[in-house]
Image (tube, rainbow, N blue to C red; front, side, top):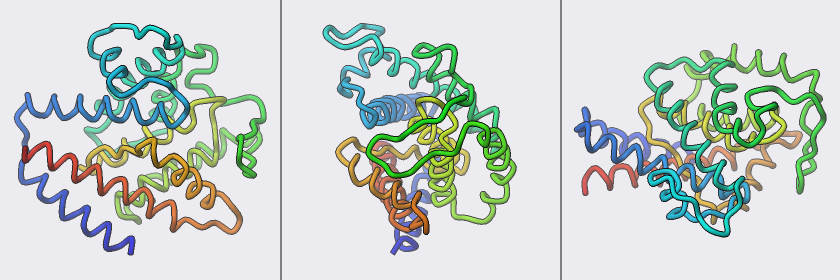
Length: 248
């Protein structure tokens, strides 16, 4: 079933490729559209209370929203700036350990400057999950191994499956004190962009399904199928939306 979904995504991507190279003005508009969508959705999945419209006003107009916390504002601005890093790194097919740290640092430095872009030094528990992340002393080695495996994984798997795998691996290692989910979604989308696929947005309404399938992929023995199918589904919807914008 997932193979059929991947085939459909590739068919849609081929139709998108027919529009390339995009007019610079249109390309900018599409990038900003997905920047707002990804920033809103990724933050909302973690409990940020801003609406998509409020997120857009903060990012594009620099206007604060009454009654919303400073942290909510910082998360919107930081994630938007991390998207700049995302777009900058999308021009090649390299993903290094430094790139992952940079994505976290840019997103997180307003919230916790001390820990932004740095691996955690303490054990953490994930609320609502039986999964226990690795101890802090194992993180540098696990992250180094992941970074070294990325070129091989990229050649071995379909780009959507590869992107989902990076997401799963990063949240499983859980290298940062906070912000792991958002960094994992940024990393997933970096992989997609580098292979010419649109940004994948996980709607907050699908939060329960998203977390359930992710937790299944972290159990022993692992069940990756549900999570990979979920990511393929959101990629499919995002690719349809990207094509709709171009055709419209």
